[in-house]
Length: 198
Image (cartoon, rainbow, N blue to C red; front, side):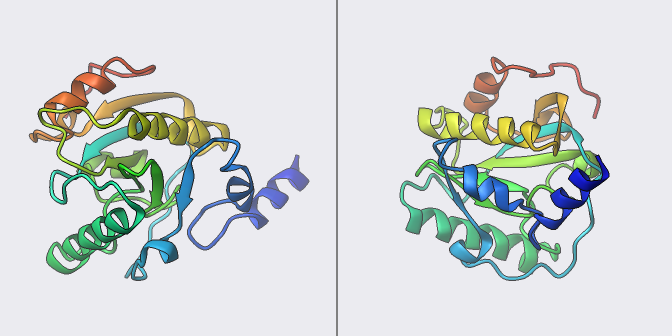
């Protein structure tokens, strides 16, 4: 057991992403874009999450709007990081991960770092933003399916608790996020939790 834990710790990258994940991403049938691949700046600081986390919190970006190509989604990531780091003076982009309309997952703060996306819930959650405005329309099916696969991978790797609660940002803050259409969609997903206190 000790050997297994040591081996696991040695496979974790500087952004908290196991090399084994990269090897298996094609088995999961989604593309994963690292921070370097979308042109992220380094964070100004990091704080470790206590793992596994009990919550997965779903967001929409609203602005920037939906992206459909790798180039557009990478630009959306840089735009969000600029807003969060330079305007809000946060340490990094707020989300742990983003899912683009191109069907790819974009690495934000990763699996092991506390995000800045849901105030009091940040230390206990993985925040996933679906890039786009999902107030009146639901994201494309492939964007939704990639999000589900990302969550499943987090559970499999031990970053997300097996009995996690899935919630929308609006359940823990007075906000429209993740948009009415997306919120109604995730309310049908496995492990959605309707009763969460702000």
